[in-house]
Image (cartoon, rainbow, N blue to C red; front, side):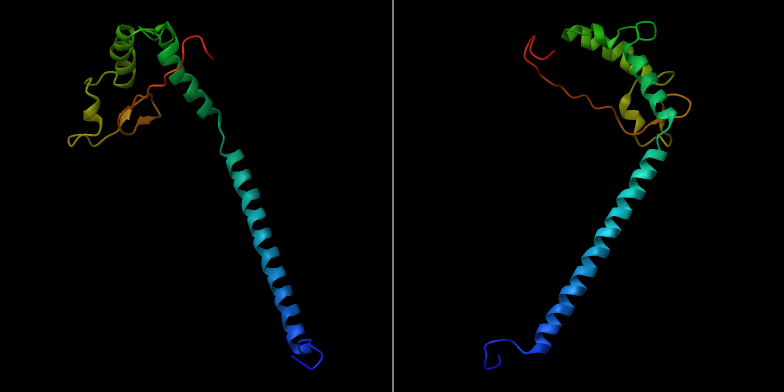
Length: 139
């Protein structure tokens, strides 16, 4: 420090240079992130296709449509009906024309993935989750 309590001018200039450098680095990082967001958004929007919606409708119809499903999911309201749905609708639709053993899909003797339809395959095994709700509350 000089006699008047102020830092020398070269130290003040260096801090101004550091501030400018930090400002430019921050602006560059911000512009890089904005560019990433724009590219990501464009790619995500362009990657949408009608086939994804068609697949969702097809799978939904396999389990909910009363003409395609022996036991539609909408009719399941008890444990015996759930087992009927699992045996007659779920397994039949997922493993059609195949053995009805879900573990064989990922077993040692299987080198291929199970087909869901002509263009899509089942990767891994099916997992069921249970969500409990209070009766007549939010249903």
